[in-house]
Image (tube, rainbow, N blue to C red; front, top):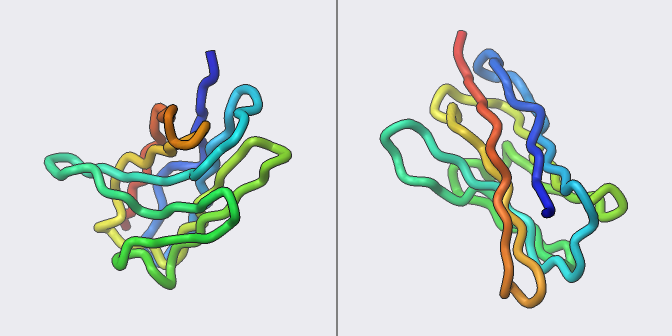
Length: 117
């Protein structure tokens, strides 16, 4: 069973930075896209960023200019660099991978990010 393990979350002050990592326990063939979602208490889950198999990226408006998604295929890992963090960024962040023509997908368990002074 392939598992996705997120790491890098924690408590950070407003204006600070964190880098989240999501690593697959074993290689996954034919990845179509890797994504980061987040969900705050009482709110719906929202898409934060996507990177495709050819390296193109998309970002939610509320993180443009602050967050960067990247990947390392050799390490089976996707990253989310988060800068200029705001209290409203506080949420549980989960990675999501689609593969085999998006016929399959897998979710990570999530990592908590808390932005507070």
